[in-house]
Length: 504
Image (cartoon, rainbow, N blue to C red):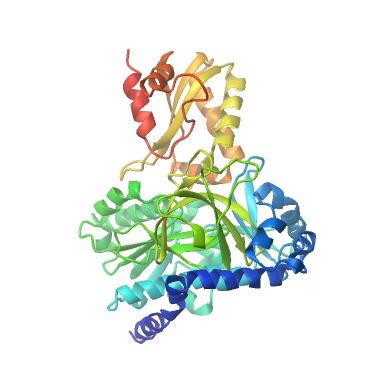
């Protein structure tokens, strides 16, 4: 009771920390850019790109090309092998393991002390400040906060540093007072095997007074269903009657609203979305539990730039600062951070819903993808897997598309692949197995979600009649030219349209 009062008072009082993002975003970003450049000018990257001569934003843009993971990878590899002062001056001992790129199963994002303290942890403090501000009678600190995270391991290239999921990096570095309120204990929360971990988490938390939860919706639903099963309960409030806040992010939440509503018919749980990636903490839902926009956090050690998607792929693409963005336009997000990611194109696209203050929604990825369950399946992954499955089964594919089958309370999610073959595989079951195995091999996030069929079942394959995709393109007026059926979609619109055409 006393701890709840003290923490509630503390988070309400520190609302001024949030106000710079609301009231002074442009001046905050201008000052931050100069601070980042000054910090980085004596690093290897800073010397190479003339940071000492950068005085303005225009200088910054001229001095540093837009970066991808591939272009930063040589620098990151040096850090992973133990070299310091490469991208950022302070010591880097942690790397957040994220989803694969065109050439890697996983990518490793450097995490500095500054990015932990002034970005990730500040983000959590500001989130709680906003929540307490909008919910002055909250009792979330009277119970436990359930954190659903990943795992970590010693860096194979350098035994004095570590790699792991962002959640595991955060759990290993959280302030002491957080551990007083957290459940389950770290030795359970950080277990590497998901199936074992979920069962141990359920047993460890089923009798706790859980008042808040943070985690990806996929795993949260699985855990909730398991603790309800252990208690013989029909709703989650029968297990955790004081549960009042769920903090989520990582995937679009709309497909999960119905499953969560089924677990909480009273609709008494508040939801707050965050934009919290391996590369940084960028946004917090700050108004109303039903509002999908998030406040852009401009004082978290992250300098933002934005490439209009109409410019994406151009050799000299136009990139603008926060002062030039427009409402309703899709932008590829570019960041420079206090962990040494310089003009890094993160791969996400956002759209501003207002500019006073700056609020936005995540609209997708710069490339085709499926990310319904946190699997971040990219088109490069799909093409490699499809080619391998064809090679192993003597098949020829004419066309294909894939989309998610969303989670239901009684079954896991899945990917549905609609495939038109020029030559059918020798064995369709083996084709499906090879497709699944190759997707696991090239994408660590997909592999994790497929573990034990808990969140993601094996692919569902529908063999389409010859001409089905042609008919769909014709119906859309997209025959000829550069038009093609999108390979991956994060919703079911295209798949359902093609299924309606694929009739005898």
